[in-house]
Image (cartoon, rainbow, N blue to C red; front, side, top):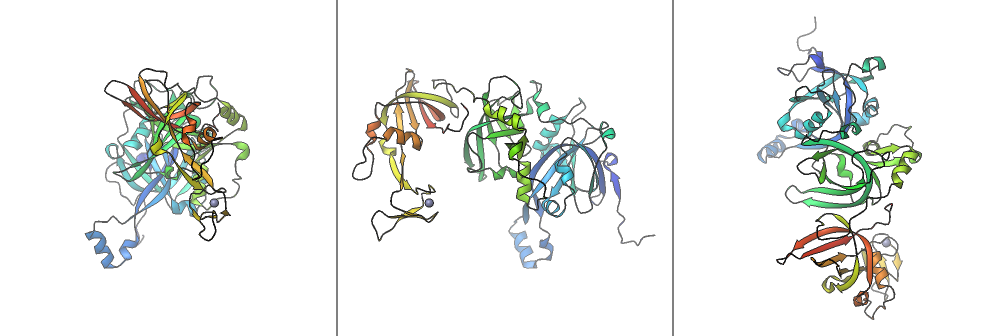
Length: 480
Ligand SMILES: [Zn+2]
């Protein structure tokens, strides 16, 4: 007989776990198909709160500050024998202290036996819409929708084992992201995946939530994941929401025009078919060829490295080059029907220059930093505050916005914000004046284009004449 205060640990099988009266101290064994692996930011209650001073506690309570810490967790969505899904979370500490979870990381599509998971939450459909949208999309049977989902935590006592091949067929099949593309058009929302070439991206800030979003323009073919089909590539626009998840890591320096990206589990909404959205369950990965894959022999102890590895997708060199050689989608020529946020081709004669918006600035000739200062002691000596270079001839940058003549009678105005290299080409040959400024009027009547452009603004005046504001895109790294 055990002592009374020595809590007897109960371990139950997930299949026999009811939805009522479940104790959070119960340990659960789960055998299931790993359908998806994704990152999620989890708020964890700060345990230090209990041991901290009462003053701090009262400050927190009075100020109604939620003393919570945000931490990254690697999660998997596992589907059991009865088609029901649960989420298993591997928190940062586990990821850094143990290595047996690697079995999980490389097992998307496989069946695993996870023992002694800790039950942490029971999620309902209404409070976890994104999670249930993913669960719904994986459904392989016509059985009723799952109404709630257990969340388990992989903790110190959890062990993980692979399930032998002969027993794997007892579990639901792997609903790979690729298999979801064969969707039924009648469904309002479903998930899709594809690979494509990044043509353009734009970061925007949500003023209300102070969050960043990014919009991506990719050339690819949505009905097929990879290059195997001969279908013409099209442009897809993807809105990536940053509310949570590791997509945070994307920024202006990690996204590169011309890069190949793999997008999985994007949400296609029949009501808004032109823009796909990426939520925290959508995976955006950089595609790398097998030959340039870094050596994974050593086990990483760095969370960032683990993340980086899950955020890249490796293809065979052949697959990679086939995809890389696909020409980008043909952009339409600018016409009155083109809409804001679209990508177009544009060409014409320069009819005018926006003089109010024309200006020059200097930058470092080595690192292109604009953080440079004039050395007061000597004339025309500069110092770069970023790379500490001293130099005499800085790089001159010119901001130039021009107007193009349009052949369409319904378009009244086409204004284009030019890239540096285009501006410099146009101005080459024009003499710098004494004050180191360029004579911008020298570009008038020159022919420009065809240019790849982004439609930043489209407006219609009272005479139904349309005006466009375009931004030239750097297409030098695109495969044209
Ligand atoms: Zn510099």
